[in-house]
Length: 62
Image (cartoon, rainbow, N blue to C red; front, side, top):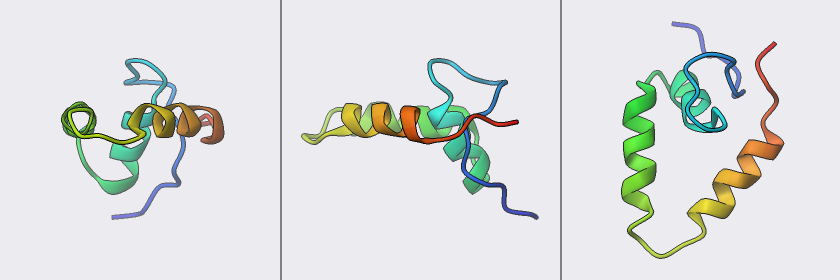
């Protein structure tokens, strides 16, 4: 299994592609990462700010 670089894919996106990019990088399904993100939103913390920062900072897949 080859590791892919962390980037936002052009396919399988729902909003910005951040969860799909993380899922591809770590070999998970995008819906698993999206579910974990939604569950993390129940906890206090800057989840939305981190998501927005990753949306801006992660390069788009070529």
